[in-house]
Length: 127
Image (cartoon, rainbow, N blue to C red):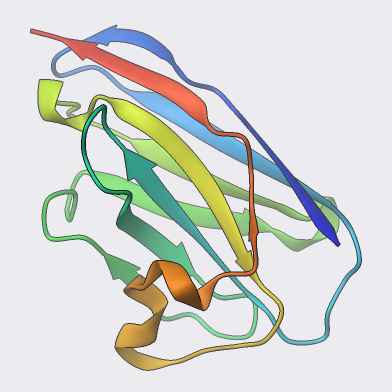
């Protein structure tokens, strides 16, 4: 029942930055989990980053660690992804995901963990 809408994608040169936003609406939960995933053409959708409302623990894919930062705004029911030092291999459609209940451990990296998905926003990085 949760609706997710991503925005902020675009075309940038390698080394540039973008900030993605995900606005959530609809049903709210006392305990939940949100994350960012991405999918390149011909590739499987992969985990990028996550930050829980109920805690301060963050998880990042090894490929983006040190370059991407996930953050949230509870008042706006929004989650963000600041992407710096972008590389051509970061080119993909980026998706916001939501889980109705909290989760801990490596399960945060699995697609099956999540209940709702946004439509995605395209990020293209040129060399």
